[in-house]
Image (cartoon, rainbow, N blue to C red; front, side):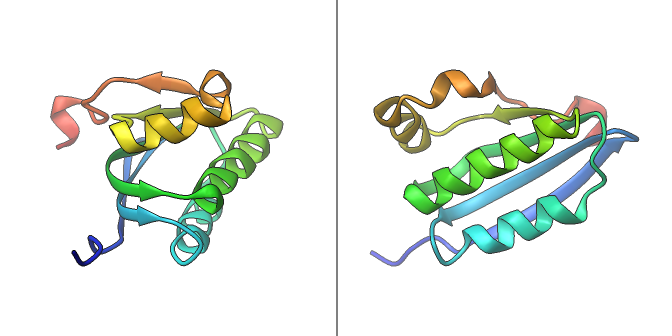
Length: 114
């Protein structure tokens, strides 16, 4: 079965709140693109990462999330993971890292931003 295509969509909900929707596989090939998208955003307020369409995440995807968390926390930016898929949740549970993240149920965007 072919892998779901990787995509990123960034929505600025309001000044200080950005939502990054990630779809497909978050792995060693795609994680650098995700990290670059986060780096390009202003470090302020709240960053929500919508993982509801992630079909696979390996250790590099997890490592990227952890590095992003560390950087944003150091800059005073809140990070939340939204719509965590079962596959991503399993990785977070198995590695004991789930408690490091704020998890939010969908929808990730307010009704007015869709």
